[in-house]
Length: 76
Image (cartoon, rainbow, N blue to C red; front, side, top):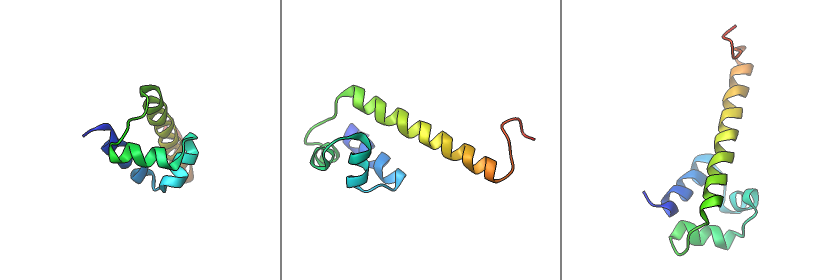
């Protein structure tokens, strides 16, 4: 899977539109479209930043779901 496919998959996995995803990372929608189409590629630092932020948000969501279910990190 190339970088354009990965970016598109990441965006769709989060359920964000191109507009909302690009706003989240401070990039123009047209730039995101070009990345997803393979016309151009993002700088590596930005790819790493996107992956890191999405991972942090996923972990926060898991913790929120656990606290709603009455579970704590220590299992009590």
